[in-house]
Image (cartoon, rainbow, N blue to C red; front, side):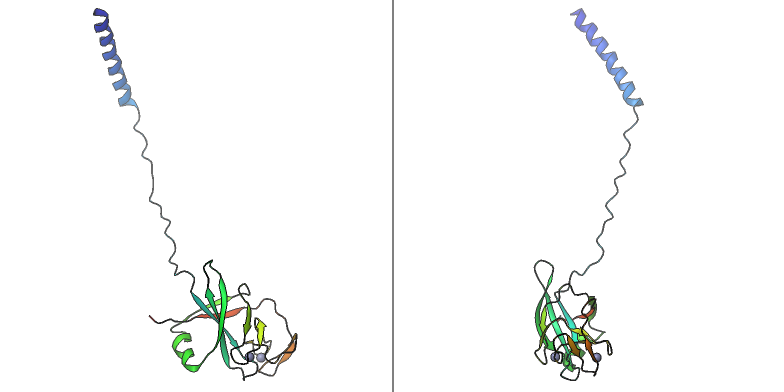
Length: 169
Ligand SMILES: [Zn+2]
Ligand SMILES: [Zn+2]
């Protein structure tokens, strides 16, 4: 029993020693965990629809649009071609109500001109009037514009002006 008491005694002094060491031990550094400041930049996401503006070579340069719709995988697919009427232009395409985007050829598919019906894998950029024109007056790779200009077609590097039409609501 005496041994036990003695043991307890030394145990008590060991505890005191431990407590003393405990006090001297530097308190753990506070981890400077900052709240993640990664807030995604405001992003309206991809527009569900983009209308690319073209004009018709046959119909005096009247405007039409190739409508591309966002698909489930985040790409765009050609859907239809529509004539751009004055009403449409005023209500959905006016700069005050619509946003515009510039596209390269990534999503461009075969489009049929809304006015003359001639299909083409993308319009032609007229070197004279700078409009994107359907191939309604072209023969093969020889392009004729509504503005009177003509020449061999170069298709590389076309930039398409797209309008994100204002939708109801
Ligand atoms: Zn056309
Ligand atoms: Zn032209």
